[in-house]
Image 1 (cartoon, chains in turn yellow, green):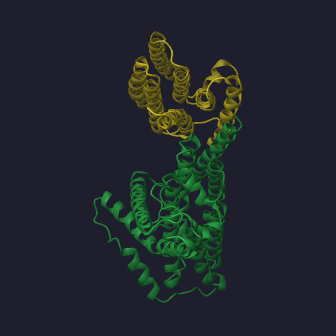
Image 2 (cartoon, each protein chain N blue to C red):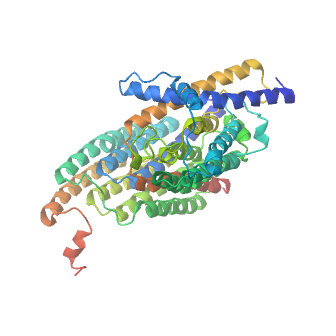
Length: 224
Length: 319
């Protein structure tokens, strides 16, 4: 491929991480369970596209496996399972947030700015697009953490956790990939973490009759 | 076609086209929506017939209406028509393009909205006031979002002249940029809100409590209403053309192009309008109208996209 075509393809590779940041904001914007789970599936789909595109550019076949894992597990299995959990727990109406959506979005923009400011100076030697990709991956991680902080519902905290993991995989593929063994074990450990969390959710629900994490403070003796 | 005469001719054709084709676009959107609902829908030219009928009817003006009420429709149509004449549709290098940039277009649209809201308040009916207050409520959020998006696009192209922006984004060195994607999503959201389409406002509703634009113009009739309807249709065409010339600038004839290139540009523009209208109809069919008090969240997201785009560009410039 010639040079002009090459830059266009690199730019397309650059678009996907940007798209993931956008979908992270979309996750935060959702205030219904079904919308949140759909947005999470889109998040995983964009991740799969980003990884597959990197596999094509780097000519690294094992990244296709990563993309497939992301697509099957996070794009299909986990959203379907989450949907069933939500139906069982009967929490599909609204999502209670600690902070309302507007300030959360502004805070999220601050986090994106922070990750760009942090990431760009420490990666001076690599090319600009890869640097911005790393900054985007860090922002996806930070936005996932923010989501876990601002949501009171345990199910949406799980979605936040999963999106953090998506950000980590994005960072790993941008940095010329990680070994396939590590990749597969990470994918499966996330799946197992998901199963554990899912069971934990049912236990919380059984015990305290709610999945609102703030209600647990009272049981810890923090609120009189 | 070169020289100043050619440029003036192109500009004149554009000025005529944006007004003449606007009702057709509205008819097209209605037709596609009707077909999606498995209805046959009115004919494509129905908006023209409506306008013609309204123009021939007597204009009934409320007793308490001041001169402002009668003048406002002309001002609104003039401002929106003027703004639409500035957007490169089928050819760049417009004569008027030198005189005004993207920020001026935003300003003209704001002027139109200001007079429409004043006219809504003027008669003193409760619905007019309600519509006007809601319109301003939406505008206070939509305008900053629009401006941030304009800044993003302008930073990318290095100019606020829409002509130059369109030409820059078509050139190979522009490339793809994440900020451009953010600006596109944001501008689509603003366009939906500004044109009073679902999910922000319903253009076909007859339930006063859910109306924004329709509530404001409830007191208008006859030729005044015809002017306002034409202005609303032109605004829709303006936004579709704006999206097309910034984010899909292919096929637009360059400055001093021949008649063949201009005709090709016009054909491509018509195709873009048809595609944009069809996408709008599909979008309106699949989403439900949101509560008025959720609109700040929606437009806040558009504002955020504009912010994010500007931020990214600032940072990547400072590399």
